[in-house]
Amino acid sequence: MSIALGHERDVAIADLLDRALNKGVVLSGEATISLAGVDLIYVGLKVLVASYETASRIRDKQPLAAPLSDERDTQ
Picture: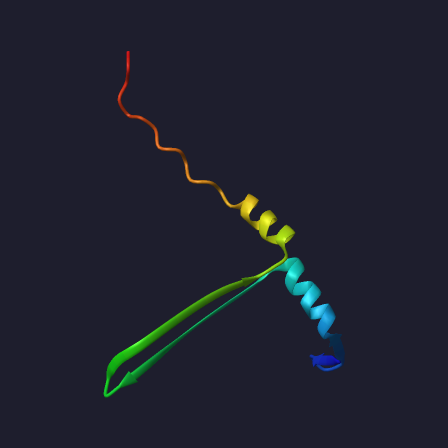
């Protein structure tokens, strides 16, 4: 099975999945159910689709928070 992207480009689903796992894809969405202008239910969703190696590589590139320093001088 293939999907047509653009005018003349066919891409197999396996190729799309391979690219998504290699690069990583973030999906986000939200839905609100309201009645008479009152929000009854809110659902928020954020999903990261990536391989373990890609997620580790992305995590390692993120700067870590600076450790808290003790501002008291002990001299």
